[in-house]
Length: 239
Image (tube, rainbow, N blue to C red; front, side, top):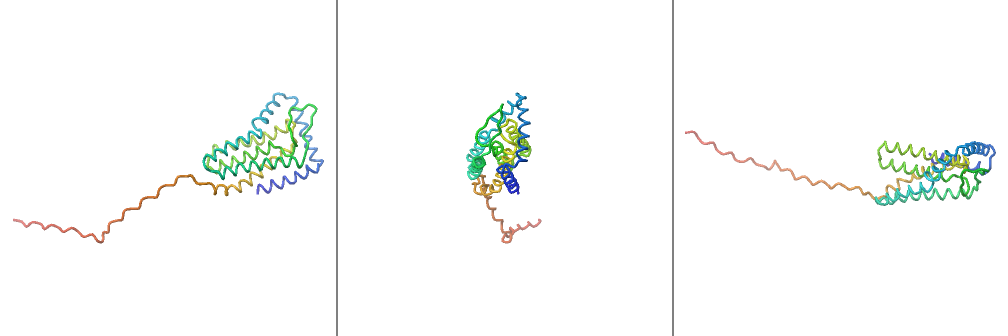
């Protein structure tokens, strides 16, 4: 259901962006202009956004995190799940670059830029990669029965990361708001599809859980029906 809703929303958004629908582009420009004015004035906050965007939430940081988890799964002998994780990440990257090339949307241009970026704008690779990475890792935490406290902390961190990286890209003037929205939608849709496919990978993964040895068979109970009472000794006669 999530994949269908996100996919349908993405199709509508992609159509409007490709058709350069005026009202949508106007909203994009208004948001970008207002945030850029703030970024030019507030140098310290802009530098913080650059650190978060270019290092903490950078797509390569997210891919490195997925690579570490993939390596851990391989070490545990769960290679089908590791392949599921790596393949989903690759599909996300290929889809991102394919849409960028197909849509060819230009990034915002400023006379006084505070940051720079390469390639086309739609969709945001930062938003897509962060959403997909966080979604996959949260699912793995859930299926591995990690304690609720840690899952809650991970979910909060994921929410801050996904929303934060999207806002930094628009604040720094390298993406339109709809680029980020598209990245979120693609990331959610891919995560939903991957979750649907996960049982096939989990079933194919070898079970390394040690099996308990079969209990020994109980010794046969004595056959009381065949037992005969021992002969009772005669009592001696009195004198």
